[in-house]
Amino acid sequence: GTSPQEQLVDLLEGTLWTRRLGSISEDVVAALVCRIFEGIRNFYITSVELKFNAFFLLRIFDEFPIVLREELERCYEHQLEDIFDVGVLRKHLSGRKTNLMEELDQVKKLQKKFAAIHSTLSQPARQPLASNTVLINSSTKKYATHHQRQATAI
Image 1 (tube, rainbow, N blue to C red):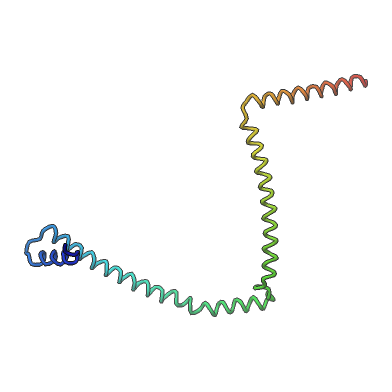
Image 2 (image 1 turned 60 degrees about the vertical axis):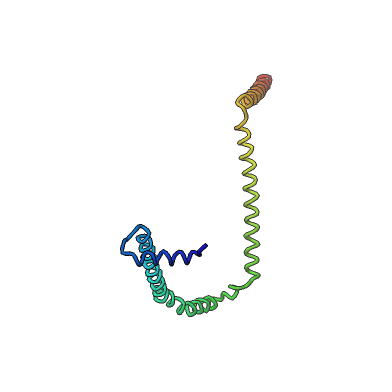
């Protein structure tokens, strides 16, 4: 039982003191090169991020409080004192809630209508024909009764 660090040291010592390049020594060199380039890449990315933030974002942070104060002062000049008035906001939100509740009721009614239409259309083919013949027969009887009344009136 040797620790992983001791095994790594033994491996490095074995590869450093030999003149032959084996597959293990190539893997060690490749791993070292990858670590070096990863460190360079991380350093480069960090420095670019810092420069980018310093160049672009610091201007925004410097100017933002001034711009915000000017905008608020301009709003107050136009007599908009109720910008931060909670009562106005509550009234607006309660009106919006009522509108949404009414819209919800309308949507529920539409859903019921569509469900009724769907259930009517999904019934087997014989049932609608039977109900249509009943409607046709009753409308024919009404038509015949209506014409008989007209004929007797003449």
